[in-house]
Length: 407
Image (cartoon, one colour):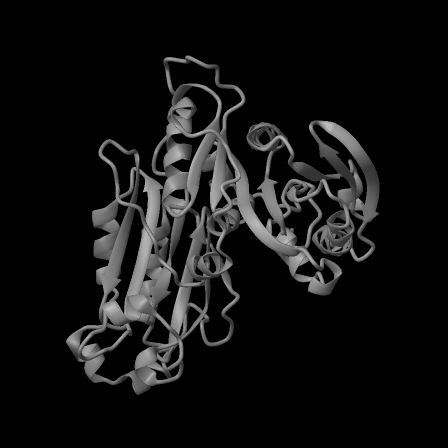
């Protein structure tokens, strides 16, 4: 026998409550461990109330504190002790951990990983479902927000993340998302454009996830929330890897689109530094990898959420033999006769996406014949306006704004 542990994360209490109600209906014997951050604890020592319930009845409440200031760490420690205790009962075999707002579902994975398997014997433990609850009408605005988790008075280890960065991370991790729009009414004939955009953005960011929903109108067309037990940790790691690109097939009539740009030659660092403002403007999410002439031996990972674009070291090129044991199916499928797996691939997602403009601006960054003839050794010594050599942690704050206008 096994203990099945699932996780639910969210940014807003209304969508979290709606998702929890739907998931609990799916499994009546579900044991819910809910952590709720205490009011005001974000400015002092973070603390949370932990409630254990089943069939809607509270079985136990307790307080946990985070003297180090990391609420996520305190929950990891609490789960690593609590779950073995529950394993000794005969009623806690299916568990859903509901996290404080702004705390990542990685916390539950880390808590389970910290458990000594011997403490659970003869039972085993598995991760069933990792779900994130979303405000369908507010998702686009949250992705664009410059506000961080700290600005929102959420004290966790990742409090320097923007709201959008948190949500993108959860969507890439999750195997299920739950769309909610508490202000929507069943049978509503006029469907909000913001809800439509939120539904489509979730699909473009997480094409691998099961889309479920609670509510009326457009959301009534989706499957109801359930714990499908489809989480695969290896798959989640691969799709969240820096430089990874995945886009869904676009359906007719969608207002949100994703466009993939592929460039074979190295990119001119100076032209790229100028063009990145153009290509990222109006894009709510962008991701991929670059071959930049000023740092030719490394894959430069690109991740953009709302107003921020960050670069990071995504590893070496297989063609250089630096990472000969890395399995990269995309590199093998797109292998170039001259450049190998070197090259650039970026995907951009937005409402009213200017795909031709993005394509033109990036293609113009490729080295010309004359520039390429100088040799990459030459470019490795030239100015580095994107500061790739000095730091891969540099965040570029762009004056990005949505191209569409809200009424």
